[in-house]
Image (cartoon, rainbow, N blue to C red; front, side, top):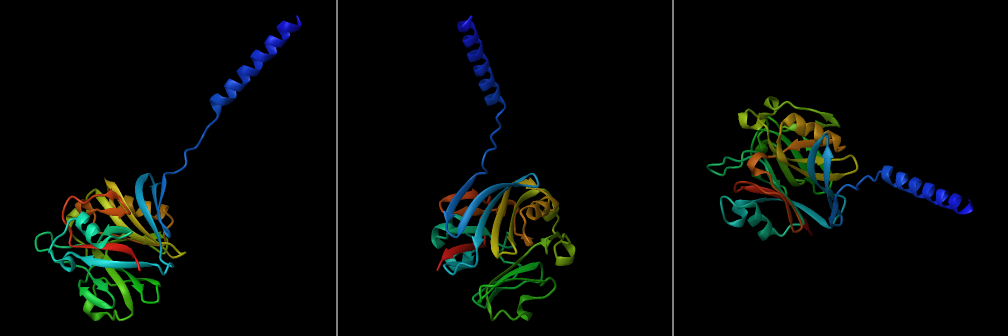
Length: 258
C-alpha cells in the first residue's frame, strides 16, 4: 500500500511539472547588435512596420556627421558600396533628392558652413558648430538666402513626417509634387529625440508616407523627415548593409569618427 501511494505521488509530481512547463511563455528579446559606441542598431517593429534603426548619440564629440557627394569622390554617380568603401564610415544612409538623369541635387546640402547645393523644397535638419541640432522650416526659401555660417551640416529633404512629436504630412506645402513620392515604396528617413539622439531609419518593404510617419512616431521621436527612398534606400552600419539601393546615388550622409 505504501509503495502504491509513493508511485501515485511521483506520477502526480511529474504531471504537474510537465503541465507547468507546457504553459510557460518566454518572450524573445528584440534583435540588437551593438555597432560602435555611442552607436547602436536595432530592428524594431514600429506601428507594425519592420524598421532598421541606427541610433547615434550626437552628444559624443568623437563622432562627425558629414554630407558626401559623388562629385567629392570624383564621379557624377556612385554606388552606395563605393561611398562606404571610400569614406569608411561607422554608419551611412542615403541622402536627399536628385535628378536621376543629370545627377543634380535638388535640395539644400551644407558642409562646414558652405552651401554645396541649393533648393527651395523640403524641411531641413541642421547640426551647428556648437553640436546642437536644429530643425529649420526652409520650404520656399532658396538655400542662398540663408546664413549657414555656424552650421556644420545641413540637409533638406521631406516631406516632414513628425514635428514636435505629432504626425505632420503636407508634401505640397513643402514643394513636393512628384507622383512617385506618394506611391508605396521602400523608405528612409532622419529623426531626432528630445534627448539628442539621431535616428537613421530604413524600411525595406513598400509602405506609404502615412505608414512611415506612424512608424516614426511609434519610435518615440520628436522630429522626423523622409529622405530620398524608393530605389535609393540605403543603410549601413559597420560591416553590414541593412538596406541596399537599386541604383547609383549622388549623395549620402555618413557618421565618422573624428
